[in-house]
Length: 414
Image 1 (cartoon, rainbow, N blue to C red):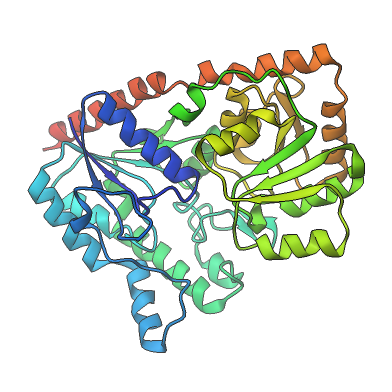
Image 2 (image 1 turned 135 degrees about the horizontal axis):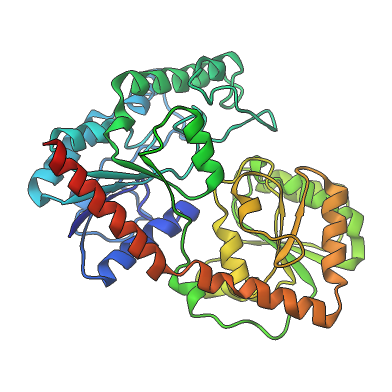
């Protein structure tokens, strides 16, 4: 099968790209020909299709008024992405397309190219963009579902993006524009990594016949690792250092715990400077910022940790870090939001706590680090079960079935 994979980043930027490259390898290992469409970037992995990639778009860089206005229009529709994808499709003639992250750089204009060539299309929803213009269901440090039934004007009214009227207006216009164009209707199936995601999209009147609940899978980095016999007395957060990840709650809990345990944080992000300054100013003890780590260096830290902490204050779509940690025998303590509750079984492979409740989080951490040796060993064994529950072989079988159904549906409608 010729499979066109589409994602705006062609380097590992976060969990979505970890999934994307794992998916690419899985398909290639099973004998499929993979075609890639993405955006140019100096950090990109090499690709034979890079000449077809769109020019780099960076909305964070400073620019003049004219450039910002042009950028605003490109955020909603990229004519370059449409034309280049049309050319790539004409050259390669894929059997099916699997769309991932596309917003603002590639834009949903790519769906119009797929429609033009009648390409069967599967779309993995890595965030809540289909029901929320700012994609997080999160505003002003609170969960927000005001737009979920298609009332996207609430994004503008509540200045949901960067507390900016202009940016929020742009995202509102983008949402209504693609709703009017029915851009997402091009997708034959929408893959939802969690039941929570499935329910949010269903509430927005996306037909059940299009929605598929399919949890993510483990990549080889974690499949090849055995359970660690020696744990060290530290808890671990790894991921993006951003507001919605709830790291302030974790620091509040660490302040309550004091000398009882060390907290290590791996990752970078927009909140990094502020969080480091806060730790220093408030003299929060036993906190270590380890910066960015990946590959074996990251896995080594996860294996040694007594627990991984997921303190998110937004509705996490899935929580790839959860199944990664569990698969090496490291229990997880997570907040009761989004897809997290579907992966953590209270008292079996970790603990759950109420969103933004630092006292309950501190209590759950204290409870875990004070388990008896036998109790903790049982929790390790329970956690390790994730290695069997999220095997790529199972995911591959389910995905190919979805691909085949999408292709057959297209043939019937011709």
